[in-house]
Amino acid sequence: MASISLKNVIKRYGTGKTANQVIHGVNAEIADGEFIVIVGPSGCGKSTLLRMVAGLEEVSGGQISIGGRVVNDLEPSDRDIAMVFQNYALYPHMSVFDNMAYGLKIAKVPLDEIKARVDKAAKILEIGPFLERKPRELSGGQRQRVAMGRAIVRQPQVFLFDEPLSNLDAKLRAQTRLEIQKLHRELGITSLFVTHDQVEAMTLAQRMIVMNGGVMEQFGTPEEVYTRPATTFVASFIGSPPMNLLKNAPDAQAGTITGVRPEHLDITATGWALQVEAVEMLGAERLVYGRWTHSSTDELVIIRTEESHAVPVLGTTIHVTPRPDRIHHFDAATGKRK
Amino acid sequence: MVERNSFLTFLAHAIMILGVAVVAFPLYLAFVASTHTAQEIVQAPMPLLPGGHMWETYSKALIGGGAGAGSTAPVAHMMWVSLVTALVITFGKITISLMSAFAIVYFRFPFKGFFFWAIFITLMLPVEVRIGPTYKVVADLGMLNTYAGLTIPLIASATATFLFRQFFMSVPDELTEAARMDGASPMRFFIDILLPLSKTSIAALFVIQFIYGWNQYLWPLLATTSEDMYPVVVGIKMMVAGGDSQNEWNVVMATALLAMLPPAAVVILMQKWFVKGLVDTEK
Image (tube, rainbow over all chains, first blue to last red; front, side, top):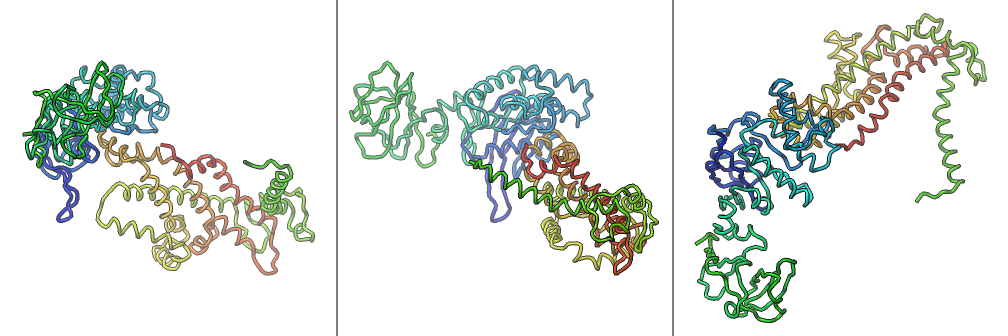
């Protein structure tokens, strides 16, 4: 039973008048075995939230439960969790084997059990040949795998990942992403994964928490977050190029922002009139940037077209029609979905 | 781009050789003096080549009981006193500073700021400044002429505390957090992780503090009155009776050379760690 429950979790720094609240009441129920990604821009509080679940930060308000137990006042090592850090946090003077065995040694696990667990984790992560090496003799990707191995041998109820892929190059990142997915399929342990990269979020998450400024804006599957974003922030954060959030679309209502993704705008004979300002060729697709001809606002509309389409000429007027079931409406004042 | 000018190279080497000669010549003279008899040295000019009395002089120094006007205490025992004092001071300083730095960097406790500044201010108080009150306290406690009296007043070190503090602050927080997640208690973290990482700093400090402890002159001079508790540096001074008395200079020189050997040995042995400790940035 390794479900995680966050009830109105609040984080405040300082006390009294100068207190600074950085997390404003996060509520989430995470089922056993789920892979949850917490995603958001820098400074949104995602790492702070993860560290509160880990026990490295104190909870200022609300309750965090792991496996049905309230853990607010428990030390990290008593919460039956394991964490993978952004900078690996491997003990530099110990061999890979000792790094992985350290937590078990402190828990007084018998030596042959330790060896069995380390060997098993090493096999899953393919770091068997490195067991006697020191961390400084390993590459970044290898070190990250050792860090994951250290988490696996603890056989915890929950895995916590704090931006583990941020220090890897793009190719390695994609590779390690697949390895993490494989690991989750094999081990099925509840995982909380923090990242600022929406691609990682979309590919790894079974459900994701989108955070902004300490507020949980949406908690849903990647599909839900992409097709029915709850706020303008979520709409513009997920998806690349970002969703068009238009105040001045023709036939728009006052006080409403019309949202439509670039791939859901088709270039047609009639429809919204735009003057082509720029065209970006990305190989498989093209991005066309246009400005309204009917109003003189600064809004830039992005349209994604396929290569089979004719290339729009700069300066000419084109017409686009949004697909009717793919239009979103948001309240201009609150940003929330109408 | 270093200019390759053979004259400049020659000049550079010449100056350095001159420097070495200036530093080494007095040591050489001391060695020469220790290999002659007292009468041979006193005759002017002093011989510049080693004589044949080396073993005689050194054994007289080590065992004591010569014919000089000053102290004739056996140097062997004084060297032992010096060694014990220096080692106790060194190990004591390192242990105490490690623990203080650990507390200052990793814990929150009441009046932490006050204690930090108190330690810092002691940097402005060398032994000489506090010698009066320290003497009174040690005398009242009956610790004169004891190893305890020689070592305990010198055993705390603000410099070492700060060196370790700076080092501990450079250890990434993530390492501490990973250790916490692994279930390591603070002492466990200290022993299993901080200490091994501090090895080179400890080695550097060992050399510095050993030499400091070995060379202590003023405090032992005050704190000891009997010959069998003199460290060797005090012993050297005691051998020179002053005025026009007939000192056995050869024995004095031999003692001085003997006194230089242990610190030199420590420096040479720890040399590679010493440099590494002061500039180490390995993580």
